[in-house]
Image 1 (cartoon, one colour):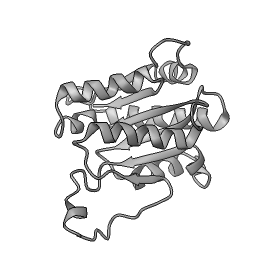
Image 2 (tube, one colour):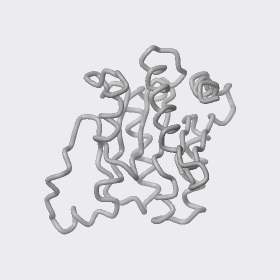
Image 3 (cartoon, helix red, strand yellow):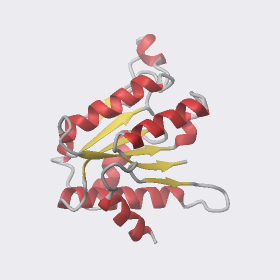
Image 4 (cartoon, helix red, strand yellow):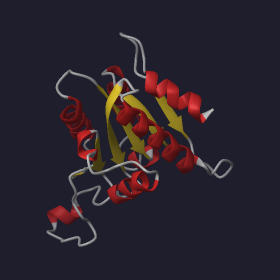
Length: 185
C-alpha cells in the first residue's frame, strides 16, 4: 500500500487539479506514523533523484525533529546528500520555533546550520512560513519551472502556535499552488 501511495505522489496530478496530499496519522492505536512518513519521504527522494517524479525538489518543514535527523535519515537509507542542496531544503521550525533565542541573543551550540537548512524565526506567522516554503522550493526548481513537494513533520505541532483555520488555509494555499503535500500529524 505504501508503494501505491508513493507512486501517486510521484506521478502527481493533472493540469488544473489540486496537487495530491497525503496525511499520515500517528496514534496510540497505530504508532507507526513516523516509520510510514520516513518511508514515503525516502521513496519520494529516490524518485526525485532518479527523475521519475513530476516533483523536482523537496522542502521539509521540520517542527518535531531537527534538520540533522533528516540528513542522517537520508544517509542511512543510502541517499547521497553531497548534492542534496540541489533538490532538498529543510525549513527548521524545530530549533527555536518562537524566536526566543534570537531575541535574547542566546547562542545555541547544539544548532549547526547547514547548506540544507534554513532557520524559521517565528512559526506563529503562517504567511511568512508560506513565503519561506515557496522561496525555498523555487530556489530548488526555479521560478515557475517545475513543481516541488512539501513534507510537514507534525501538523499537530503547528496547531500549538496557530489556529486551525490558519493552518488549514496554509495547507490549502500550498495545494492550490501545485505543491505535493506529505503531512505527518
